[in-house]
Image 1 (cartoon, rainbow, N blue to C red):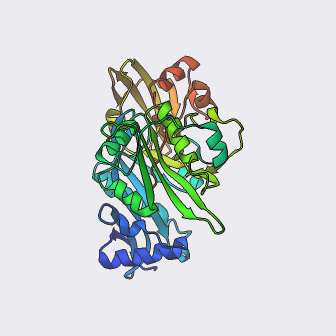
Image 2 (cartoon, helix red, strand yellow):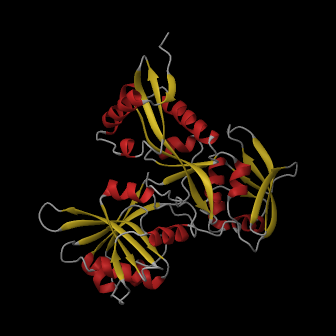
Image 3 (cartoon, rainbow, N blue to C red):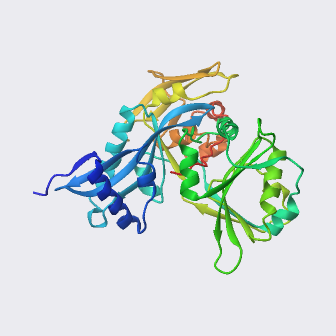
Length: 388
């Protein structure tokens, strides 16, 4: 009989083993295992005193509909190469989530290269994720400075700006106080603020890495603009680095999904690279709907059928949105729309911008009209610029 595996919270000794295992599994050190230790829930799988799998979990809200929803952010999961293929990762995910759900998480999010694997477990990608690169000279030709004040460094006001702008999208993390210092240290970021000191309208952070031959590689990590004029000023500021950086790179999902860059280019000589996406899963349906923000002007009730977490049965629910509040309750009314768990995640994040998009993703509805009513409930677009 094989020796029993225990999944436990990591103490100092087990944490060290997990850190070493992650380095062996990923092929490089995973600095977040040390940096995030004071803030993370760390679980490891142990056999005979030896760590054979592990992962981090952060209980941090994400914005949906303008409201923070408690979320389990999963990171740095790994299984020893010699232990793979025995469904240990499934057990690890379940146990990591169990403790974070006990602490209040109603949804969970992760970045993963194993999209097909986590889809089978109920996660789905609400939106495609791209990284962008453009020649600095092309950016310089497309945008000119307007004289908006620019200062170096983060401030309390820029953190407040970032939180305010994050509410306008579905997915951004409600960054805890320790978050900016963590990402600045991790990526060695240089940060600038745009606009008046007491009421900035833009926040830009990027990393610079010396090139092998000449100049540097500049990669944008944070791009937060309150309006089109500020976004243009930030692009022009990036273009002013043309003497040292031949190209400007926007890290995956760093650039918001609006056309501030594309619509201003004289020539479309930029590169878009598809990356592995962020994936979302709904765990507590009733609480996820209750805590989420909803449009103030809606007054609707839609019967829906939703696939249960076991993936084998379907529940009947009534989704009601009125006066900016939403609730979903069990009912005996036949559903007019049918959603799998993965389709539920896309809808929740606003990934279906039209009824046509939902229908082509396999969402079944009694009519186009009722599908349109369901889609109208999620007015914000999905975007997750935060990496963990």
